[in-house]
Length: 193
Image (cartoon, rainbow, N blue to C red):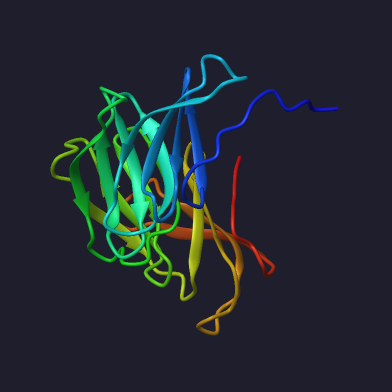
């Protein structure tokens, strides 16, 4: 059976966790982004934090940047090269007021944006991310994960009269992603491969 070795009690309401080496990044809702050192799992230590303009919902990290979704403020890009002093370097709000989940593949971020569907963002320049594509699925998109060629998005219910479930999108052409499959069901909030 699993055995608890340590704990960290964040001040907020953690919505997402991403582990990179000996660091853990928390999207801590109203408390923003938290960075923890977990080199000693029995005693995780908070080493850095960044307040956000809106509630932090999801986070992924690649290299020296964290990609954070904030309700009301879209995608925020954070320089985490110095974990004790993370700093905002870029962001994008276009069609992402209700940003929920985020996934990254290469220099492209995929943002589950509630009623705005899936937004595809070029983040090759973290200070000036650009929206390159969008797929509206006529529903409320909660989360996204990436495969090699496909984006897998989930919506939780038929808010706008469409069929909720797991949507599979071919994102080979990020300017015009196309739906290639749907597993119809209700109540989905997260997806992982």
